[in-house]
Amino acid sequence: APIGSLTGRRPLPPEMSERTGCPFDPPAARFRLLEEQGPVAKVPLLNGAHVWLVTGYQEVRNAISDIRLSSDVVRNTNAMSLTSEQVTTGSCPAQPDLQRTDGMFIFMDPPEHSRLRKVLTSQFTVRRMRALDQRVHEITDELITAMQGAGTTADLVTDFALALPSLVICELLGVPYEDRAEFQERSAITLNINNTPEQQRDAGIALWEFMRNLVIAKRTAPGDDMLSGLISGELAADPPLTDAELIDIGVTLLGAGHETTANMLALSVFALLEHPEQLAALRNDPTLIDAAIEELLRYLSVSHTGPTRIALEDITLGGVEIPAGDTVVISLPTANRDEERWPEPGQLDVTRPRDTGHMAFGYGIHQCLGQQLARVELRVGLVELFTRLPGLRLAAPAAEIPLRTDMVVFGVHSLPVAWD
Ligand code: HEM
Image (spheres, rainbow, N blue to C red):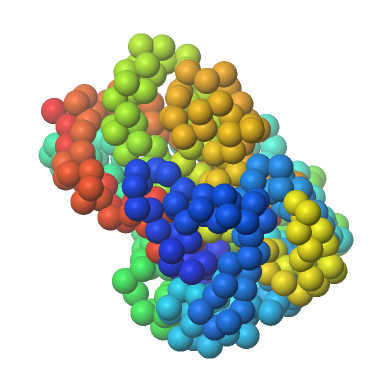
């Protein structure tokens, strides 16, 4: 199931994702590697293979924007031939049943990638983003009202953080209201770690079928949404996109925009509650919010085990020779804590000047297409939660909050909260 590639379990050996100290700090093993081997280090896998882990800011920036490092981890890979056991023991950089289909442009290189990226970028119009901004406010309002109606406690992950981005993607794609419960249920299953690989795969297929029906519906009755815009209208693709491409684009938007934003929301609330002086600074000066969002993106770097690339030719990165065919894993969290780039990078400090130079959204030709939308969701979501739920606090000891060290996207599996 293609969706599994964007979500799911860790692609690195377990110790490379484990957080032993502060839950918001990148795994200690990566800093150890940085010290011992420098910013480009060789990491052995359990099966005797290895990957290259890039941890420094400049090296990450160079690697992630170097098109000799392919995003097509499906076709160009030495890591995909691992057994399923190696996958379940967490020693594999990717999933072996991964299939890249027609429109998964996140896994494409130029010129294929350029073509799809261009048609999609043209759909993120100012007008559409403004309309979405309005809907983000309304959806946030509805979710918080529902939480208040149900009492003074909630699991912020299921009741808010997963729901908001999922509903926003429904808006973006034009999923009819009557189908949204089904859409949310299916996308939630693909994200649930407790499901078996079979359940996960079935949910992925069901989601793909859902998207196919949506595409067919938009062909006959186009709306004001992005899928319709891709099919018809002024900025529609030329030559026209196929159904398979449109379905994959829909699945990619969901895969890339749901879990990432959900975890940034929940983890940001957790981090602010654990740094009360930062929360107080933000409350005292609400104009800090945009700078605070960038700081939270930098400090938390939820995309913590990738992106992954494959060397198409021998390259030298940070003085290290990487042979053609090798897998390169890019560590955004350590790059975003580079002392040469930020003073006191280990401190969450919402009063830093607004700085978008972090790499939480990646960099280069694959840099996050949904970043403006993600920023809107984070700003509206965080402001409204802390404004409308007075005395918002954890309802469990911080040490008991289950961390997603075992997942591609870092965050919390649940976040029990209470308010007055
Ligand atoms: C790409 C992070 C939200 C859509 C990426 C990449 C990162 C990232 C690191 C680069 C992947 C690579 O280089 O291989 C995040 C984070 C988010 C977020 C941390 C939330 C806080 C969203 C949203 C959407 C979205 C809301 C859409 C609705 C995409 C797409 C790509 C992408 C389509 C692929 C772009 C390409 O390959 O050209 N994102 N993202 N993301 N993101 Fe996001």
